[in-house]
Image: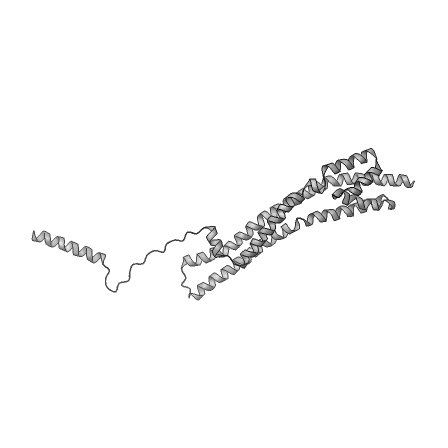
Length: 246
């Protein structure tokens, strides 16, 4: 019994010695817990002047897109009803009604043909030149409706890149101030916040450029149909004008 009691006492003392750290020994270090962070917390932490600029650009882009969805349409640029009316009057050779219809038309068709009407006394070539000039001006007018989207789409990645460079400068400046002893977790968090600006810039640029291309295609398609009808109308007006002069 004494031997068994002595062995049990020794085992108990050994377990206590193993569980109690020695005096002066450094405490065991715990592994740093990984930081799990989503996009929204990163956005909040990286919010600065560059973020404000990109948010304002996003608001402006949305406003331009919504406006152009209603305005940049074939039904507004060159309505099918107007095209059919001009084409029917040309085929019927009803020149007086054709001139009246052109004078009242406020779309691309009227903007193209009214200068030609003003130059009908100068002959066919002058009428075609005037119509081409009117079509160019009308085309530029509709293209200007889309140009702000292209500008926003081209500038957004540059603003985001500038914000990222600024964030990287701040991250490495804090590392230098800490004597190079910043933990990898802190450094990676700073870089992640800096890269958030690039992400915001791309999220703004991609839809802006996509909608700019979409609206340009709408404009070109509508104007292409109108040009054919306008060319026929100019020929009819020029022929009628030369017949009256003869």
